[in-house]
Length: 602
Image (cartoon, rainbow, N blue to C red; front, side, top):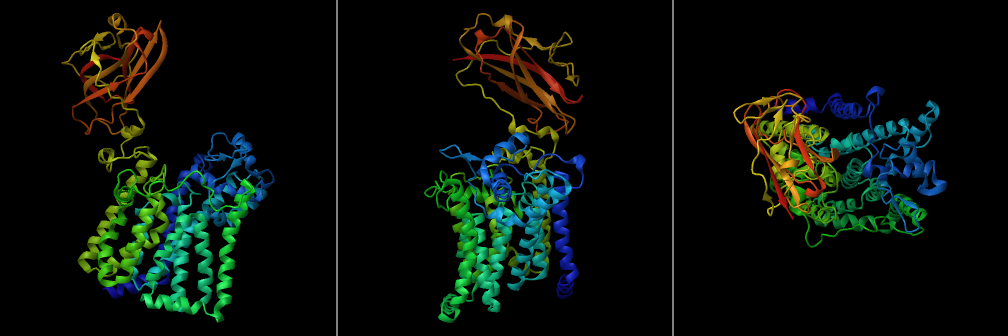
């Protein structure tokens, strides 16, 4: 059965179908998000944040180079609502400065030039940012995804791993890790390009070892250099290279052989090719700063060498790789199998993983800003997937089925993460375990923006000045603790409570807080309820507080008690009345036992 399955999966049309399906999946995701083929759904741009910095070199090199990056001022005025100028800095002489490495832009250069020709022929603006440029940037990204996957396919096959393990490994990477997210969402970020170029370098290294092709070593030098100019931490892959040899003795012997006099031409050619990406980086940095430097991140660095966030970037609920790319958890049993079946790979991948995790967790911004999962690890997924493929290859029938089911579950969980991220349920930066647990596998619109909503806590020093009050009214009918009120948009100002006259004797210099307690019952997944407080002085509205309460109940169609604290930045003397109530998005939310209590504090 295994032989027949392997023979079936080895067919060229099956391999073609695998890659075509994966790229089609990512392409349609990108199309749904950015409307490449449907202008009516076109909304937003993929060139934002760090991606804007990586991409910015292309219009600078080929269109606007005469004035440095000052053209970004014009671009900002032309596209004020887009993020094309995100993360641009200024030097001491106030010149605009792009701090990023140029490797990503080097990778995208052919596609930018095609986009430029497309813009010229279509009559679009030749500014480097109009729609044709963005379209070809997306096509370029998908081309590099394909390059990375094809290289990884051949790496795994050269390691004599089964076709089934290769198929499952590639599918898992594309649909159960954040490689998927950066293949269609934030397009010009560097990680997918690193993934592709690192895999290409590793494949060439294996070709040199196994086929003894000296030309492979030359091109390996070029791709290694390019990968470092994409992200300098990619130099860490040299830690794993010796372990692809059968022994340390074989590694040393091959190095001695290649450095012998008859092969100096090969070394010279490798050096020349390796210099090209570095030279582009040096020239670009010098043009901006008048300095020869390979470190454009002059004000940022690895601040946590002594206290790295090692555990957090692997298992932390803020961005942990294993939490938000659950498929990669198979690395752990995979490494155990490697220990018995491929010991050199075990030691090499383990050493590399420890070193890479230590270095990446020592960066000053160890969580790497807004992202889905630990995006800095994507660069090395080609290495991390090797023990997973080893695990699948050496598993028996029962375990193969179990692993396939685990991968299916990982796909479901990860795809839910992507939808939660897009719906603003999963926070782009400040996730934690309580919140992760609360939203696990939930896609209800009532949870949208819950993480973005301010949650106040009344200071411990606060003193109650009213006691719990049942001061609400609905259409001038006082609320009763024995009656259920539901679902009427009129359950809001002006038929809401006023406290001003009751509080005249409170110290006018004291700050105040407000606490709502109620029982709430939600019947719909999309029921969004906000508790709103308005602050007045002489009948003029000074401000308001808006707190989401529909995310607090854990269940639907059940009564649950909730408590909401509101701590505005006002003093008693600045107000003469407060009015509060609810904003409902539908007519199903119900409330009972509503009480409001006011506090003062210094």
